[in-house]
Image (tube, rainbow over all chains, first blue to last red; front, side):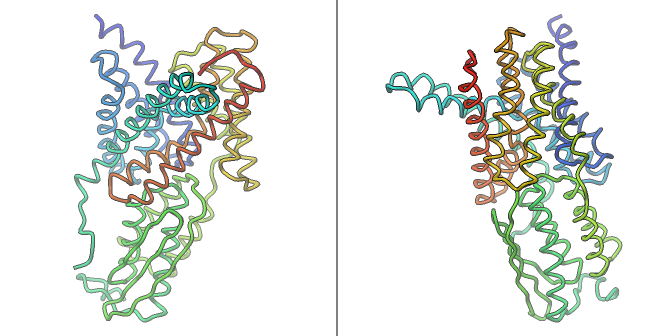
Amino acid sequence: MMILDQFGKIGVDFVLAAVVSAGFAVLFSVPRRLLLACALLGGFGYGARALLMRVNHMPLEWATLIVSLVIGFLALVLARRLRAPAPIFAIAACIPLVPGILAFTAMINFLRASTQATADGAQAYLSIALLNFLKTTLVLSSIGIGVAAPSLLFVRRKPIQD
Amino acid sequence: MENTLEAGTPPTLDRLELADVVDLALWAGTLLMHSGAESERVEETVHRIGTALGANWLDILVSPNVLIITTSSVDGEFRTKVRRISSLAVRLDIVDAVNDLSRRIEVERLDRAQVRAAMEQIARLQPYNHWLVALMVGAACAALSWMVGGDEIVFVVTFVAATAAQVVRLIMQRRSYNVFLTTVAAATVAAFIASTAALWNLSPRGQVAISSAVLLLVPGVHLINAAEDIIKGHMLTGLTRGFIGAIITLAIAIGITLALGLLQVPVTL
C-alpha cells in the first residue's frame, strides 16, 4: 500500500522533472530532434531517485549514484538510436538531480558565518555550510561517475602512440 | 588520396597540408571547448578528425584555457598550433554538429575543403530564440520550486523571477560583462522579485521561491563536467571547472544575500 500511495506523487515528479530537463535543454541549445528524449530521460531519472529515496529510504547520495549510472547507460542507448553524443542526454537528464539549493545554501551559510561576532556564533553556521558542501560534492561526484561510467567500461584507449 | 586512406596506411602529408589539418582539428577542438564538452570528448574528436584527414598521429593537450595540437605525417614531418580558450558557454547543438561532422569525415571521406565548409556552417549555428529560452527556463525553475514543496503562489512568483533573471543574464552576457558579475546581478534580480512572496505574506512557503528562482544560474554543466573530467584523469581541467563552478555558486549566494539584506526579508535559507 505504501508503494501504491507513492506512485501518484512519483508521476507528478516525473512530469515536473521532464519540464526541468526540457527547459535547461533549451537553455543549452539542444537540437529540437533530441529535446523529447532529454525530457523523458530527465523525468525518469528524478522519478526513479524519488522512488528509491521514499520507498527504499535510501540516502540522497546513494540514490543519485544508482540513478546516474542508469541514466549514463540509457544515454548511450539513446545516442546509438538517435545518432547524437551521449553526454547531451546525460547532462540534460542529470540537471534535475544537481543539488543547486544545497550548493548555495552552503555558500550563504559560509557568508553568514563570517559576519558573526564570536567564534561560537559562527560555529552553527559553519556546520550547516560544511554539511551542505559535503552533500553537494558527493552528489555531484555521484552524477559524474554515472555519466562517465559507460565510456569507462566500453571505450578503453591506449594513452600514447606505440 | 582516396586509395591511400584505405587499409590503414596514412598518406604522406607535406608541411602545407599538415598546417591545414592542424588548423581544422584545432578549430573543431576550440568549438567543442567553447560549447561545454568534457576534455575526453575534445581529445577523441580532434584525434578522429585529424587522422581521418590523413595525419598519422595527433598529440592533443587539453588545458583549461588553451588547446595545443601537434599533427604528424608518416615521414616524421609535424606541425603544432596553439589556441586560447576564452569562454565557457554551453552550446550542445555545436557539440552535436561537430560530433556528426567527425563521423561524416570518416564515413563519407570528406576532403579538407568540404570539412572547412561544414565547419563554417557549424560556427554560424544560432541558439534558440531568447524569449523562448527565458520562458522555458522560468518554467523549469517554477517546476523545481514545486518539486521542493512550493505552492501555487510560489510557482508563479518563481516563474516571473527566474524569467527576469534570465533576461538580465542574457543582456549582460551580450555586453560581455564578467561572468561572476553577471551571476551576482541576475541572482539579485531573481531574489528581489522572488522575495515578494515572503515579504507580502502571499505564501507560507515564501522562502522556496527565493531558493528556486536562482537555480537557472547554478553552473550544472560545469560541475558535472568537472566531476567527469577528474574521474577520467583530466585533473587540471576538472579542478578548474569545479572551482569556476564553486565561485559562480558563491556569486549566487552573494546575490541572494544582497537582495535579502536590502529588502530586510524575514527568512533564513
